[in-house]
Image (cartoon, rainbow, N blue to C red):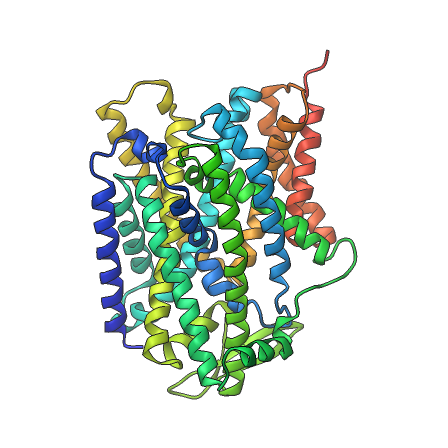
Length: 495
């Protein structure tokens, strides 16, 4: 696809975002930035959360991860996600609304004390910085392939400009702006996937029922896996999916901040029920897209699958040289969409990948700022002031620069599908949050508050050792949570 056309699409897209930002940022104050004045329509939040939950990981990494014998195995994890969303709506949302929280980690202060509260907020900051950086890295890589290399722009500058644009359209309206921009971004992502499926189906001479039969008969749609108790099987995937959802959404300020902008608990729960249902079908769409991409690539003889030293390797044929070049599976979708499917699919892909980048990154930056200002700086404990507004701008900028640096580090280190990196990292950083909240909700014990940070430091190291011995995959989050729960019990107040 012509890089100049791609650049034009990106510019047009950002003009729309800045128009939305201008409208939603009018008269914005501290409450607008943090809670959108608790006046967001539930259906708007629900649709926007689909895009925020999918992000660039689902848009790019999930289709590529279908290869190498994995098939639709990821869908087991998605079914677990759905269960987690229902639990979240029934257990966590009522708690947050009853306590009228701006930052959800305020619960830990009320339940256990100052040190537990600060530990929870720091765990979130660390977790979200890692997760948002991984997501942003993935899409920045695609933008670099699409236009950066053509114009001779270095990768670091592509990342810097991307994050600067996010800062500019979120620093005033905050979560109110994000709720509206996420709606546009979700639409673009789903439209891009639908158009690509249609173009590939047409290229393969299939439509409707024949496409469904082609997918069912292919080796790429195998869904359920079975194995021993310490392997990535159906049970561990379902449980891990539910737990990951509870911690990465229910215990995550980024995602819950949007839910807490609804007018009341009933509307927030309605939002979650509708959003989670659409989320399942959206993931199924992207998995189907991945299977079609592999089938199309093999049919056109532009990709190959090989096993090298026991590991799956994807080879994509370079257009000018016709040489077979090893590629990350994350590069499958962009490589085919931009070079082999024509202008309609190319334009749709560019729109989708931009939407994927900013549907998660903008809300992450806003949530990081909110958590730091409320949890660390204590904004809610003193009246609003011009100095606080200036401090909020500075915090917003600081986290934007932090994301930039972490993305560059990850670009230097990464060598596999990002979808697995994100959820693996979540198992270690969110696991202690799972244990802390579970202990608070399901026991009546008080704890020695000053010892809680040590529990939350030790547990991830023990979890890593267990994972090294037994290779638990995503299931490590349950082990980490249980260890933290046990640690909280050991430091409970006696007598």
